Length: 316
Image 1 (cartoon, rainbow, N blue to C red):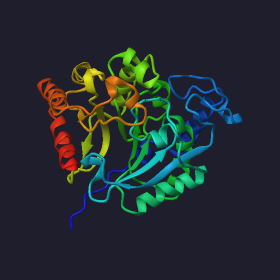
Image 2: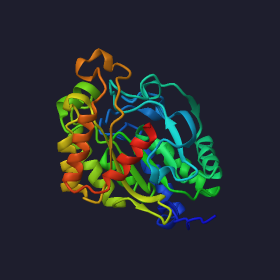
Image 3: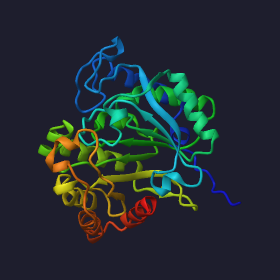
């Protein structure tokens, strides 16, 4: 069987152990009076105080294992090695993982145990370490990466987030993360405030995505179609135009790159507290999804169709 040559991840090819340790120390300082995410709530997380994300310096995860429901460039043959972190710095009323993000279902894990989980996923053959909702745990993740590198970690790290990210934090992640996978949830701050509790979301996510792209560029895949570096953007179409999809896609096309991988997702269904909100209390129609995908293609985002096809195949 043919196998693709593995590309060394940036944390091995571009950073020394000393540089990684310096980043970890800088990250830990961000938790002293927390400024890890754009909320900058000032919680003294190192002293056991909970931030807006309802986290201290204790890492809590829900699960870890190979995942085959992600985009094709991440899944490959052996799956994406996902680690689901509990809690979130957003408060989406329609979150489809609300038991993890909002109800905080999970178990505590030490830094060394987190590193061991990464190595276990690599040993299973996973193509990457996919950190799901990692924002509030970024300092601890970097410490875990240091331990894991010492024990042989050598696959790309995927930062799978809600897009509400601090540029300061992202700069400290440069050359640690190989693949950024942000959601761009809204282009309307009033909707972001009302449905996710983030009144400055649109300004923040634009700056964050631009910084991600500056670091890693467009998504790059090997000869077998497996991603090893770059930006993969997700956008969930919401009912009644709540997500502001056209403006989101215009931003990607005009200010990021026409070569962006964009997954215009059509699987929205009312979850968590969405049933309490009339505007959110229905699935999207095929016409709403087709309109958004068609607009992306009309803008020249030519790589969107590959992921749209993958999504359709996974649902049928």
